[in-house]
Length: 161
Image (cartoon, rainbow, N blue to C red; front, side, top):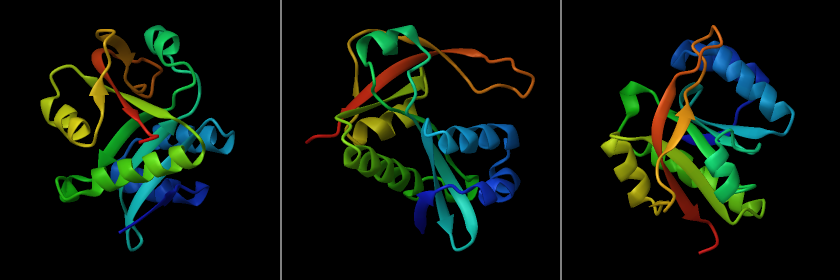
């Protein structure tokens, strides 16, 4: 398996294998404008997962206030055929190396309250819950511009250690 930045020509593969064509088109455009990085995992020429590194100011006021300038890991996704086989962990580790290499000291992410398995994964990888309570986060658009609000736990990891 290899992990690399997504390329514009990857859009058809991403959409065919993982769905969400508009989402990936948007993230590729943000990457082009240096607002983030879309990392993708591949087995040969088949995309098997992705994670987006949000480098813009956080949308959530609480995260803006408590973690200004901190990048966010968003949209970790692994194709259903390969879940629980280390793909997500490898994507997260690659993201952490990329961010640390760019001089970032911390990384954060949000997990929907009650998503115990995902929160357990991040805790195992060294993320810790922040002390500022839950945050209202917004899921990706449904394609019509509507975004669902979710209550999330924010987890943070120190990249300097």
